[in-house]
Length: 301
Image 1 (cartoon, rainbow, N blue to C red):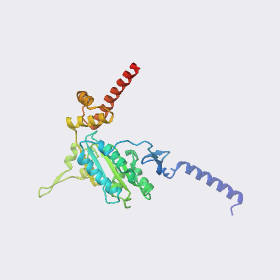
Image 2 (tube, rainbow, N blue to C red):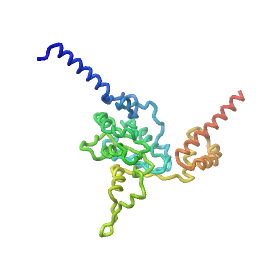
Image 3 (spheres, rainbow, N blue to C red):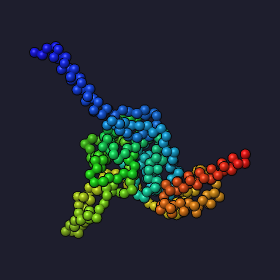
Image 4 (cartoon, rainbow, N blue to C red):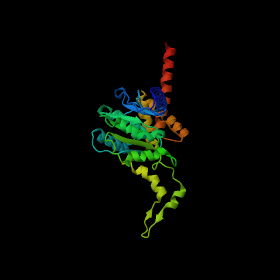
């Protein structure tokens, strides 16, 4: 029979082992202050994930987004259905860079935040934590969009499988207060190679069927119920977006007309007439104009 001294020694050793294990194991995900904001980021610290409140969200609304009317109508309708508790789809927004994909998602947050919509931004590297995030918000009354921006994968990345399971493939039912919205410059999310064409096969009746490699590359995209495509802007569309943002910065119509050629040169230098380039030009032009006005007023005083 073990003596009391030996028992105490054994218990002390067990406590030291448990203390070391607790230091190594990640802590349980802590819930944030849900009332502190309408948007959150998933962060990792010492192996533990947690939701960090975004104190200052992008101040952009749906009326600020021009020349993407059909895309705006689709995602606004889907998001409204979701907020109201009706069936809604996960969304993949793909296409030309700088055309408003991520801005459209942020604008939906602005539009529906008062009705309980919340946004959780998750980096591609942390997609394996999606089950933990869903579990953390499953009992909340708010409606959560998990936002993955500029999403693409290379062969064999772990986040690819995790996202497939989260979208449609887990034995557990998806929480009805969570949707996934993702943006990408390419529709199939995995790099496509010339060698993929060799995997296609012909059947006796002449049908063409993709092989396993191609099937794998398109299977993730197919799990998004709604695909929304974006296209490059023409010159008139680009100038219209420039004019909108210049007005928002206080420029009058004469100044907007004077800015036309400079705006076109700005786009030519960057090789793009995107909405992002228009926004950047408007900030630069309006900033210079306001600075000249400030300097002129200072000299007159």
